[in-house]
Image (cartoon, rainbow, N blue to C red):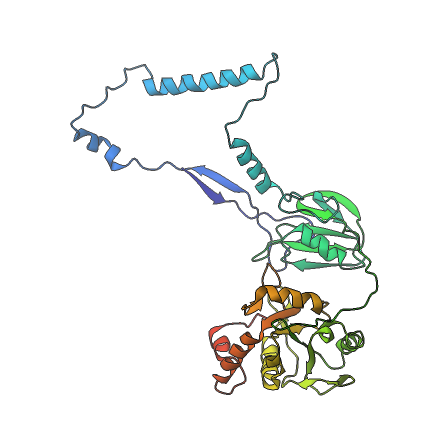
Length: 387
């Protein structure tokens, strides 16, 4: 029986070390363990059998079974040598399925095989290579599961000219990291890293933003939470002027902790919150769950959402197209919400059915002061979670 035993931790070289911990080697050591002989095959059990015991091997001779196995091994070795001899380099044919097993093993051992799981959108990647850059601009993101996503993140940042993806940076959960850089620098071979340049950035032609113009069953009530005095005010004013973002929905609203005139006829609804929170968790993101508990309480109290089929919360700096969303929600009739990412729901845009908000409103009413959803607060621990 073979049992896999973990190898001792290995300190990696280079600068791609996980914050708060070091990556450990994925290699394993194999130790051969011999299981004890079952009782039914022991000499005591054999003595109680009616069958006579097998004859003992003669002194100076090997058991027949051992000789047979040795002859079989010799025959196989001789066949392989004959096929690889000078009479022709004939390849040894593997049994059916063996080639597939080898390819799977190679895939598991490889740091990354570009295009193996899905069509790649990135230029050719340098596998097991690090782009080392001295100085200049750079940033990194934790828990990025693939170099394809790392390349896409680089494409979205104008100053990013190259990236390096670390397969195992020793992080909890998804252990991978993405490093964005302003140049390729010097290429160095390094196992477990994938580097490359981003796909070309597409230039979008200016055009008229379409509104959602929802029909029965897919009308949209969209809102944003705005921090007063921040850049978000200017973003929402621009969206209003161009009927873009939330202002392309059937109904738009802005929430803040102050009554602010965002645009003509658009005054923010007041939320009972300072809109301040700490940062933390595994990605150092905003721990703003209680802020949005107050926001949703205000949304329910205002009540405008009830006149529409769907409720959309969008960050002021989130770009989305309401006309496309109105077509999409028609495919999810009866759903409570729409998941916006295969890695879990993310906050920049959240889409709920108005029925789901009705159920949330009942949960608020069941709490002792009506200011928080009872089952959520009592049944969930979200100290390190955001909205």
